[in-house]
Length: 343
Image (cartoon, rainbow, N blue to C red):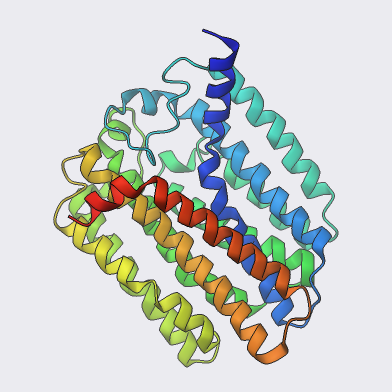
């Protein structure tokens, strides 16, 4: 095997395509701070973004090592499930993946120490801890029916909370109200991903929620989660906890929930066929990205309408624009799968 193949496998382990999402929860946390009247501190905004990326890549390298047995058993993987396959294909030694995870773990803890307040350091430490033990022993959350909740807690809770803490020194209720529906959708989105891996996971003793409750009950929970999330969103807007511009933007993603539920209920994930599963897991994953992106866009629209362009809001508008361009590029690359998903 050439050094080029090894390097390519090492980079494949990082699964960089999943890192695009990170700009949304970090940007959302920063936008809530700006909404409170706090000028955007670009240094701490970039710090929060780097922290999220470091923890995320650390999790990938850690997961690849500790999930190797499950990935080897998975013969019906998709581009979004079943791991990167770099270790399974023998491109990189498993020990190399674990060593990279430890390096990034150290870097993540270094960033936690550098945070300015004890509150941000506590949340930062909790983030690193949950991310590491997502698959690492002895806790192995994703092997004990807690993986889906762990992912939601980090991606749709702790990352934006750290971002707003670094800006404003507090986690306002507005952010919590916005994040709660997205956390529900993130939890059931992870159930969709694990639904596709349930046969191989069960064979190696990996007890995700779909393994524990089975396909039909998992689909019922995922369906209920869609209703709960948009019901919460609407209730919070009626109560005045979420601005209506934010509600409009987030509610516009509801048709994706309908499409996802229809696909699941017709059995696209039942037979564990990669060709049928790929559009479902693709859109389940990007559904969460889009609703968080919509929340960020709605927050920025509300700021622009009420407060103008001060406080660094244009920086965040630029972030949304760049994300939209990159997401559009992702859709273009996946256009073949998109056509199949509409059949």
